[in-house]
Length: 462
Image (cartoon, rainbow, N blue to C red; front, side, top):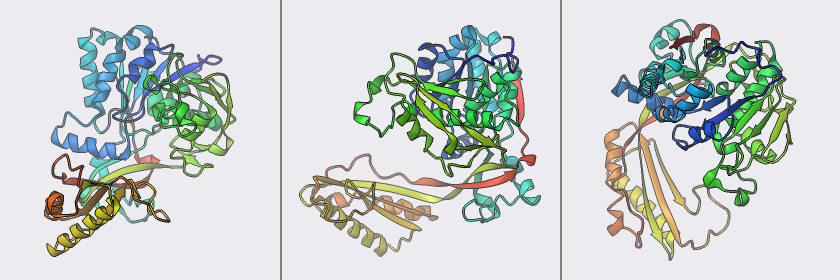
């Protein structure tokens, strides 16, 4: 494959298709995106903060793991499009082990007989865990962004620390002719912005254009959430969700773009659906901060450009900060959650009695926890306590969870729920799944670090 020189696509449209919005998304989506119509890039977003800690624990158990394994099947399903039609794939599926992920992709390409047509770009350098003690010693306190507490307070419990990289390393991999680019913890938005930046040759100082790429990435980073899935507006009339089409950005060199989906697919792309996605995890609308640029969401303009087509334009940006965000995960005790369902009549009253009985028994056993949380699902779990009389619901799920540092105490809690079926309030109808499972809590520690100390590396394997 001859690499497209940055700037060659000016005046053209570059199509970036979203095929995954999280690890566990619809397995059919990647193949449907490359087979449903013309696309230039397939963007697959797998990572969330909690995902990184899960992957790190997997890597601790097996050094060859630590990446999103769903990605291997996704690549296998789109290899014909990559090898024969020149579709490029950009994904953060590398998790905490991008080289291992690349090796797995190489293996399936060789088995499919297209190894000579697959060039894999591997972006590393986001993983700060091996350097953490040195960074702390050098004065990088990695203070919690909300509490201002230094990371040293929990250093002995840290299991993952990853800086959010921007689009630069991905652009470099594309410029070096990679047709599958695998990153670790990049920003979600960079997966879409990087192809546009590479194709149109946007420079570091073209802040409005970079901001447009970031907004494009933000709109499609959650997959079908902007094309009819999880859409509140007119949700009853979203057509054919069983066949929902995942979104596609049609980008132009001037920073304008259209959000659409393939013809003949279900769901809906509308000003309303795109707006709902825009406010997702937005934060300060005037300062959406990324490693590449700060985007101003108040500048965004949307207009319908036809059926299932929304034009996005007018986006303004300004220079990025000198910091990168770091996602840190650390061990924070143990938890367990159990449930019982009580049936009418007086279902809520029975559930409340079960809660009192269980708490008294835990107290009599001398068990102490950092937190005990009760929810009455069907009455107050989603919106909290509601004013007025909730009435007499036909059934209520009593859900109770505990958390604490003493695993033995949490384990004992799990043995106190099942007895309520026979020695507590009547009409339990939904005890299933066996004894609750004790789970280790992995907590999230957001921090900032100077960009100058994070050193991304790019390797292209042919």
